[in-house]
Amino acid sequence: MTRALRVGGMVPLTTLDYPGMLACVLFCQGCAWRCRYCHNPDLITPRGSAEIDWRRVLLFLQRRQDLLDAVVFSGGEPTLQEGLPAAMDEVRAMGFRVGLHSAGIKPAGFANALRHADWVGFDVKALAEDYPMITQVKGSGVAHWRSLDALLASGVDYECRTTVHWHLIDPPRLLRLAQRLQANGVKRFAVQMVRTASMLDEHLPIAPAQMALPELWGRMHELFPAFVLRG
Figure 1 (cartoon, rainbow, N blue to C red):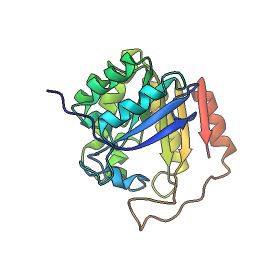
Figure 2 (figure 1 turned 135 degrees about the vertical axis):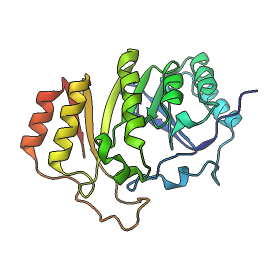
Figure 3 (figure 1 turned 180 degrees about the vertical axis):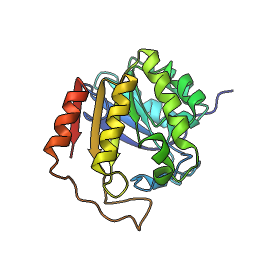
Figure 4 (figure 1 turned 30 degrees about the vertical axis):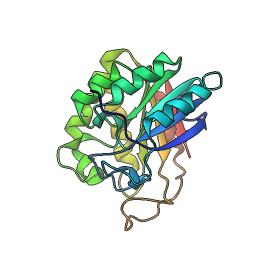
């Protein structure tokens, strides 16, 4: 018997989380990393205090079948849950397109979920060697970059995105990261500034929302056919 998906929260309507689609976002409970700037720390533990029963989620989606285009599975890290592929298939059977937000924590689980997705928002934290400084987990960068290879080989539509906290990744490192991504074949890349209202590491300084770095952003536009800077 497939385990029901553990959903720790939901956004009923968004235009931001699946490009070009009116979508609902389901925040899946549980994550194996402890990213210092994580703005959803309540989703890290395997079980949450405010979980939404999967049957309630399906009833909500049934009422929105003529109003929404897509459902996005976010987190936490959704690919850690055994019930994710079956949940994605249930949503697809209702007529929705399926989006996935993932950091590729477990390459095997990510590759399995990838087969059920129409679009992936793939979180790239840093260069592989810099991952533990952000995730606080040894070896996390190796797993992530293996998952990126699987994504690029799959043919599934995607966007790679990096969340920037200037105390954890400086402009030269961000440029080196972008160059590595471009060399690996990434075509669509977004940089988004960290949300500092709520972060897992309470001692992490509140970073400026954005630096004036026109030369850096210009280089990004040269590297990628599709580049977006989100404030």
